[in-house]
Image (cartoon, rainbow, N blue to C red; front, top):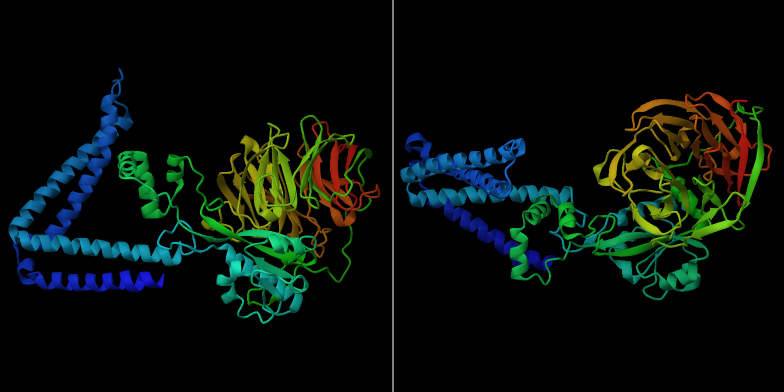
Length: 622
């Protein structure tokens, strides 16, 4: 903030520079450099070593105290206990030796010169610390809430939204900034600055005009009650973090509380992590709070509205390397031969479950044979039996717990818990079998595979599967990768690199991960840790249809079922990629989406264009 720079920072800098100059002028450089044994230079070295020894000794004291208070084991001290004693002894010896060297050097150069050298050493240490802080502040944590050198600043979501707006502009106008964008007074800063290149931007303050607002394909708002009442039927919305600021637990802190915190070794370690690395994980554990970037407690939000008929184009559109528009994959000019035609497997349509008004996508089969179905149109999860009776349902459009923004994929774990890929809320939600909310994780973010800042963030996740040991595999479709979590949403690892629009995912009992690599027109198989094992092509997937998002399922023999929406069928392969046949072609399917196989071998497929889930009995071996 400007007043902090003018009134505090600049005077402090000038005062420090003046004091450092006085200190340098007061040192007798000639006498220091001619002392026996370079005693002048030994002062700062011995001082630093003494401080290091004291720190090591202090950190080991609490551990040694705990050991001495414990009841002695008949087997004697453990290796860990001996290491604590060794650390304390080493710290004590090192501190004693360096302290003796420091006393000898002080006697050689004199107390006054030694004090000045100590002050100079401190100044050098603070200068190095300042450089480190400057680098991390400007190049690493510059827009993160964990950086407490800025009280309140814009979140990275602002840049994500701006990139999406530019994408829409390229798609609809052929230019980066010609789209009409409306924004209000709640988010006027910094968007008033970012809207300068947009000649058709519409600033409506606090009172939007409905007619003008509906002329804008994109709307940015920090207070969306009035806007939602006008555009909710024709627009989709996406919620983002607007501003955030550091944790404010220091407010109302008493001296008694401060002393108790500093006396607690776990709290001291947590505070050190915050000060040195801006890492709040230990502090969250000690205080029992949830402090993650995805759920940062001190923040404000904004909402981006996009007209529904443009939304699918936004997610399928990508900018080229030179900034020119790069179209989504276009259909080939020649007709691809259908290599899978005429190879129907013996099957019979056994069940038809109707969901009127629904657009079903992902589905999963429970242990009792009932079905869970994700309904993207109604932002809802249905639980039905095989006869079509509704056993339960939950969800509505929104961003809160048990609310969805077009859920696509879902999966069940061995306990019957339901995991949902809440696609345009950019998160995963977990429920029990009755639909009671348990937890969620994730936040919007666009990151390349391997970027540690992107761990646990998503951009339009569409597929989800449960692997061995309950690990949760999620296709982070927009970020072209697969992320793996434990059942509590803790990030474990990721893989990708060669994926383009990954959607469907299935994990075998042996841990092999099968991924529908949509825009590369292939299925890729990875090891549990993400090493590529094999792949095979699916040349019949239509790349020009942005709605075609193939899903996968495995049966007990590790045969893979792959939806081929454009040809209204399901393709079946063995685990090595050999084609076994197809199901559903010519049997009333319109647009197959999700796919699942029950324990008794029934194949279930959702038909997104007819609002149904269909079940077949089949024998892949026939």
